[in-house]
Length: 235
Image 1 (cartoon, rainbow, N blue to C red):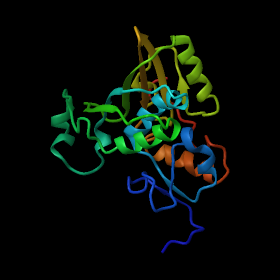
Image 2 (spheres, rainbow, N blue to C red; image 1 turned 45 degrees about the vertical axis):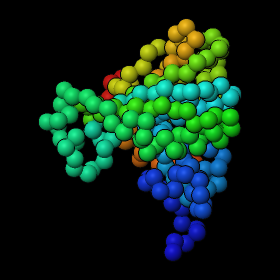
Image 3 (cartoon, one colour; image 1 turned 180 degrees about the vertical axis):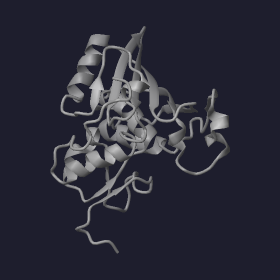
């Protein structure tokens, strides 16, 4: 049995869903206050982090209806287990969909969105893609939206103003801007009555170890950005 005084940050998916345990879901942009007082943290999944950061501001205002999301990840998103689809010879110049509408991160995404918008019915249609690059996730989510683009950007800027690692950009974003950083970049487009939210992260940093360090900093009362002031591979 682990002493309760020992602080734990768990990167598996075992404690991400609320249940009979004391783990706090470790997404600072959602649970920063709770993380600061926690001794047990469940680090979010990489797809879950990237997709949620594109949707949390809308959920905070009760604006979510049915969501359609696609997201592509690099080979490191599959972990270390040897599989046919992790071989370079298979991934090179290739792309494929997998776990259509059934990815394991859907449960934690729905849990977070419902915590902000109790009326959200879990209608999130997610298609993940395997890409032929090493690291990074680029997600695009679409919802019906009654406002204008200016009001959408105002909502996103307001929601993330106290969150140093999530930046809302009015210019189109790309993976090279986030790889090797703990950042998430978010960009919005309004096409007729559909709001398209693009979000990008490094799956190994903001989607895993970097977010764990961010959570550790908050737990220990340190500067949230300590050890994480990293430059992107292209800057």
